[in-house]
Length: 464
Ligand code: SF4
Image 1 (cartoon, helix red, strand yellow):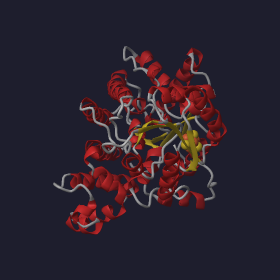
Image 2 (spheres, rainbow, N blue to C red):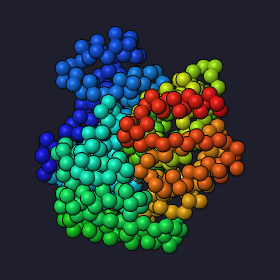
Image 3 (cartoon, rainbow, N blue to C red):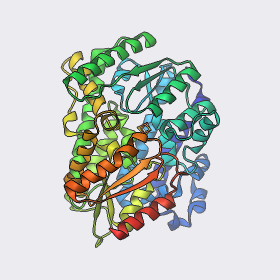
Image 4 (spheres, rainbow, N blue to C red):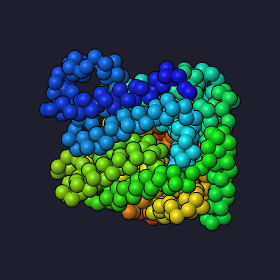
């Protein structure tokens, strides 16, 4: 069983969820300045919340207090609270701590009664919530000698493991996709903490042959996990979790359709959080988050409302790769200051043919989960033929009637730097839509700070 002090990161999320609910429930509070600023609001908080409140990004608090963001904010904070309770409960009951790469199905892990912890979420959520972000973890692993140009989506978590603020892994699961950078840190973690690493090889081809290969790999992973956990994969349990996954995907795909409406009825601030909560596909918390999001977006669409100020012309963007998680309020700033709405990106897009898991029997369920794993964000785009990625975005720009393609290039994704000109040329040729390209780091704000993001966007949209 993991030690309670090894759960400092989880406990701080739970406290942040409770704190956010407390703040959202204060009548008449729509901005911290309404009540004299952050210092003054701190004084009305229960003492237990104050230190946590100091850490939470001020702009994020003001962002979630806005009327248009409240429903999604409630769904977000309720999810964090429920998720940490659920995870802590599993760890308290002595379940194996299974760190996994984000596109892997948690349905299988849950049906095998192990506690899934998404490696990338562990530092991603810290980057999203707190002023200090995930930098302490990143610095810690780099001090160990890990190269700084590799991926912060794992570096932060690796650092936290060294700092002893996350549970030690009992087992790790990693798809070979999408990149060497991520594979290296899973290998490091396996060696450092003497935890077995289950590698799931992934095919290049997204066809029947590729699917069969993926099924074989998934079955191998299951047999290894069965040996390690001492449990056998239970068909009924797997079916139960697959139903949760299907419900979540149903809401997710409906949201994708709603975002095509003009004006866009969905707020952009939670787009990175949507990726975080996609790691909960297969859990009741995942269903709840995407259901509430769907209801909020649908209601706004039915009222014919958008999310930008009245009288401002909407400029719709699609991100050709990833978001920056360290500044959620940036996407709200884009709406309110530049009239820019944010439709989709590689990390929150699922192709319509991903479909649902057929729960008829064990074989159909594994086939559905294998297919979904192949199509999940990053896996689908990064380890495969670049035509898939390029065509996806040429189609998305058209489907969402986007005015610009934004390509924030994460510094660790070497493959992306090879691809971005091909994609922007193709999108320009097929749609006439221009592309903005710039460098950033998805989790580490020191690379392209929030003020620089705003400067880049202002310059681009003033020119556009
Ligand atoms: S963000 Fe890029 S470098 Fe990091 S894990 Fe994903 S593909 Fe690899």
